[in-house]
Structure formats: structure tokens, C-alpha cells
Length: 280
Image 1 (cartoon, rainbow, N blue to C red):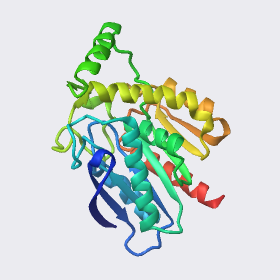
Image 2 (image 1 turned 180 degrees about the vertical axis):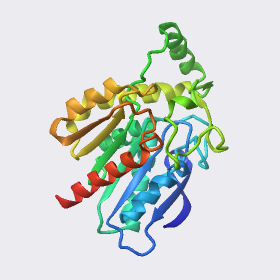
Image 3 (image 1 turned 60 degrees about the horizontal axis):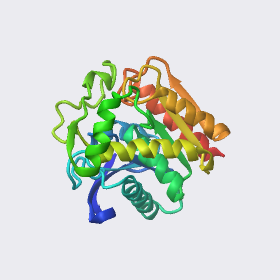
């Protein structure tokens, strides 16, 4: 596969690092725009790109503001609207780089929240939306006292960083040879600001409340043993999307389904769904 990288200027004059993988010879059948999760970056999906490009798809991934090789304080989003706008930017670039082919939007975890809000609020020209383990709600409920203190501090020092408390062992089950490690990756971090948490939390509730206005088909996947983001929230989203949603619960699956022990099968299921949309 071929790889190209560049940067663009996003919302609030953010410096955004973007890369694209595409087939070497075959005609691109569709372009897929990827939005990664909290604390990681787009290059953790290079193994996903291998499968996509082999199937004839281009995969474009940005590093969200405050992540990877993009600018910004680590773990800080200026706003959910700004993040959705940055996502709209890569959709626009995908359309320019691959005119006359469909564009799909693919968001994982926090990126699933951002992608869903982008699709709902901006109505970009996409053929379909893929959400894996979206952070609509967390799988655990923070202590009420912690939430109360956090809300007060967020209004005073919104860019105050906190540790996410993420346990790397909760991301995926070992066994998939191509899984992307996170602990050894210098571009990954374990920071989140109070403002970012509040933006994502509010954005998840807003998206659930307005899900029925979505106009494109959705593939929604979540592991039944996800300890990070809420399976119940994804089930609620699937219910509210109705016939527009293909809802897949991966039995025993952890949070990062593309890295989980059944990662290859999960990635291929996404590709199969894209193929189905293109056939309609």
C-alpha cells in the first residue's frame, strides 16, 4: 500500500497531522475517514489500513487536536464542535483526493462520539457511518463527589489535565499478532482535561437524544466485555437509530475490537458492511 502524510489547518487554527493509506495499483472503490480515540493517534490503525487497501479502499486518518503529531495540549479538545469541524475537514479532503467515489466515516471510542456528532450536526456528504465502541457514556460511573468537583474546576481551570486512569489491559485481549501496542508508543498519552471530559460527556447525551435525525446507514459494533465505554449506551443508540443501524455485539470483545484477539475478523466485518453499502 502507498502512504502519504501532510498537515492542514483546522478549527481554531489548529495544526492537524493527517495521513492516508491507499492501494498501490487498484482503483479506489471508496475513501474511509478515521477518527481515533482518546490518548492515541492515527498510526495505531496502520494494520487496519492493510486490510482496507487490500480490499480497494483508501483510509485517511487525522491526529485529533491534542493528540499524536497535531498541535494542542495533550488530551485537550477546544470543543466538541471544533473536533467535529476538523472531522468535516478530512471528509472534504477525501472528496477532493478521490472525486466520484463514496466517502465513509469511521470513529472509534471518543472518535465515535466525534464522528457521530459530525454526522448529526454537519450532515457531511458520507455514504455511511461506522462506530466501534463509541464513547457515548462510560462503562463505569464516576463517584458523584468527583463529578461535582470536576464540574466546578472545569469552569475555573478547563485545561487542567488529569490522568485517565486507563488500564492498558482493558483495551484488548492478547492474541492478535498485528495488534497495536499503546504503552510503548511515545505518541500515546494518558491525559484528559476536565473540559474535554465535559464536552464528550455532553456530546454523547446530545447525540443519543438526536440520533433519530441521522440520515445515513450505520454499522455499530461493541464488545460485550468492554470495561471502558458503555455497551448499554450503544444498545440505546441502536434502538433509536432503528432500521438505519446494523448492530453487532462482539461476544467477549474488549474495547479496541480492531486490536482484540478476533481483530482480523472484526476488521473484515467492517469491510463487508462497506461492500454491502456500495452494492445498494
